[in-house]
Length: 161
Image 1 (cartoon, rainbow, N blue to C red):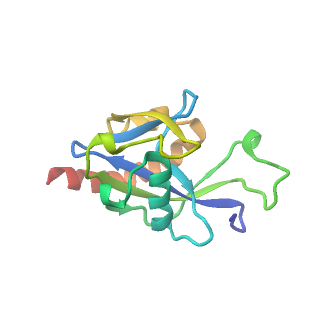
Image 2 (cartoon, rainbow, N blue to C red; image 1 turned 90 degrees about the vertical axis):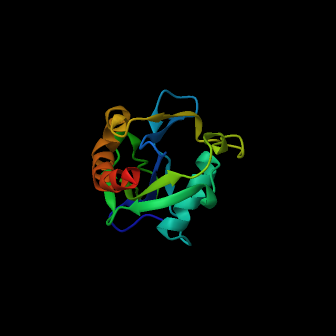
């Protein structure tokens, strides 16, 4: 589903541990790292899509995490010209995302990439909160900064307890 302006609805997931470090995953067979994210299907709201994407990309289920918060508004980024599929209709020029901040409630060993036929990631690690901002692909940096800035205060409050 692409909206009238050419943006595909999507969710982004910042998963943290009790120390305030965040889940940073390496894309399958690439030297590219990102937070879990994925599209929202026509029959889904953002929260439903988030749980589906969490399962598909990390093997984690609803009982393994706690929602700490989400962004108030859609955050958008445009794809670089070379990534736009000009022959597809409707034309998708980027993504609009609702971001969720989750806390892991179970052991790290619950993270699994082998439960589906086409894993998105092949490894992961816990990193300091702001590290992803310096290491994500360039065209996603501004949306990462906006999401992390908005959700960072929630994380600060959650890790103070």
